[in-house]
Length: 199
Image 1 (cartoon, helix red, strand yellow):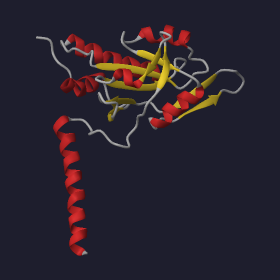
Image 2 (cartoon, rainbow, N blue to C red):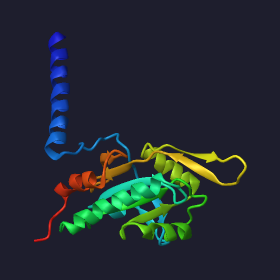
Image 3 (cartoon, helix red, strand yellow):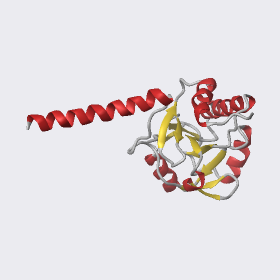
Image 4 (spheres, rainbow, N blue to C red):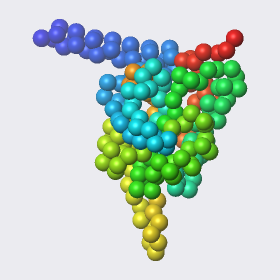
């Protein structure tokens, strides 16, 4: 029995060493079977129906926010856009990367509203909306928190939410995330290993 326990612990440590090795060799977290992410079908700011399966073969950079956000969302999307522009200026082909903005405020973020908001950022950014049930399901799959916060004395409201950029691999599996601590240069540097440089 003791030998069986020892063998099991050896297997556990070997698996942990393999995961750590993948992290340090690539500078990225290895995909997690139970990590954030899942299938979705939403409506793009262009009016088209968009599914996660359309982006197989690409790395998805997924951000949850809302267009009426007064500060965090535009700053994070600008940071993401600057990272992509920096890569392109350095000669990298960024077409393997698909940035996605999924609203957590579908009540106000209609396709028309997103169509006026999204063009302020990188030209390949897609804004996605849907019903509240659809958005709630996608947010739950990505382990993203959001909640409406009413403002006293007005009909306006804010949305509390997680502010993270999820990196999903070409098979739609979670790889890593970027937080408020990451600068555009950090994001760009992390994406270089999966991109090709012209010439």
